[in-house]
Image 1 (cartoon, rainbow, N blue to C red):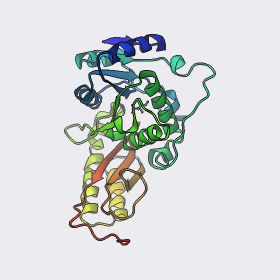
Image 2 (image 1 turned 135 degrees about the vertical axis):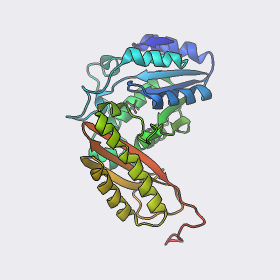
Image 3 (image 1 turned 180 degrees about the horizontal axis):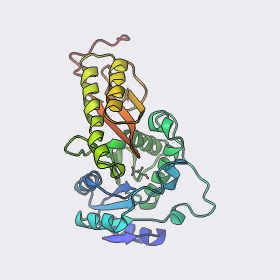
Image 4 (image 1 turned 90 degrees about the vertical axis):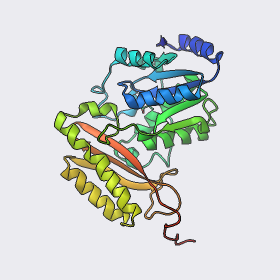
Length: 295
Ligand code: PAF
């Protein structure tokens, strides 16, 4: 496995990999867990060679957020990636990614508004900008992202479509289902912030979300189910709920009632030092769905 930290050797390494077939990229900020390894394994199944980027991107952290505290464990990450058969680790420094005089920002409207875009202003500009740069640097045929960051995936696909990216093309940007702990908590590098008791309480999040999705699908009005969900989270030890919303799964437009189009429950909530996010599908059986008022 090659570990590269500067652009010139990256170009040489990528050219070498490309000679052996298709190349997949798994962008990460390090602090790897089983969720990341699932992305790597999926990438290995789908492409001949796999590159993983490790870069804690300062532009996607707001003032007062956890940039300095974000877990960094580069040697451990590299050992995990080597064991998975990864071909290349791209680990640029901040100066390599944003050299003095750097002045360009990519801002994706629409899908980046509200949800995490509402509570973390500027976050998705930082994500879109760094991911576009990573795509241009590595020029992968395929790229893999976790569905835990559902809005992030929508922003990146929108950016790729709008900027006519070809490596990868928007339809080669693939989501991989969220990997969960035994109690249902979505795996996240930020779970490391939880104390033992907070970790136990954090399982309230997926449990309350599962209950809310089941209630909505069974006919409970969305607002009522979300009120119950917020109450459950606070009762379960969460200090604040940043948002709990049902949105169109693809466009991320708010929806007030379920129809035939796939919908998604998306939640962000705070417990201890951690802000946890999660999302789940609302699966409606079209045979029992109430008729759409416009039909
Ligand atoms: O999901 C992440 O880890 C980051 O947001 C990403 C996509 C690597 C961009 O920094």
